[in-house]
Length: 341
Image (tube, rainbow, N blue to C red):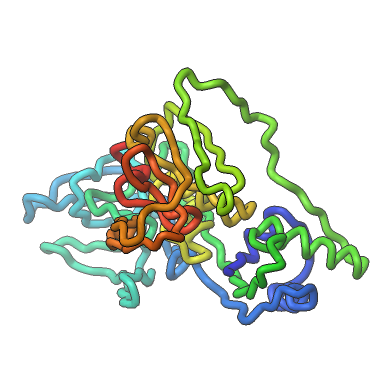
């Protein structure tokens, strides 16, 4: 199991270095095989700053390029040629300065002074995919108007180097199958060794619960395999990209961000050790969920697009017609939450 040092420090204030933390984990029965320094975004967004487009005019020798003057908080603005269709005067943008290294997978290229159709360009205005924070290449990133000029992009996006502990969890240590559980165990270690610490749990005081007009009923058929199954219906949620802090948190432990609904279920799994899965409400036929097994040889397509053959022992979360999820293991391709939900 991968445990993030920075994530632990969200719940536990302590002074151990990553290496000392690894030793502490091993001493309390959570054998730590390795400690790896990682970046949630390769290159850590070094050399990228927030700029403001002061002026934008058409390039005299091109029908799609623009010549911009960009304020980055220095005495002189930067003269930058940009081909993005959405560049405009007054925008707050991400600027890659000369010397900045950008990564495309394992390949790296360095921003240099260049001459584009006869015009000098002293940097680059960046799209999401060019700096590794997203996949969009439809245009450059446009930030909120209140974003300070000259701010480091790594500070704006909350990018920090982290350390990941590879922890071997034995079946009898369910207390350590989450970041909060591991933080709690380290707190016990620190108390035993008379070292200062402060353990805290995020507040849920602002949460509220209402009774839905029409609810989904859960029925546990295989009670030997599942004692209890519960859920909640949530309406009025806009499915969209997760905030940067959540994307970075998941990326740090090797998970791929998908959307805000799916990502928060994965976050809670690794925060509190609580397996969750979000279903598209419209795909729960009959307004009922059944926890049961399906006949030997039943075909089921999982989220990765692979058709799998089920055994008669595979516990499934089903609607009235078909399976929707391999319980606690893998969601189904056709019942998950997407941008169309």
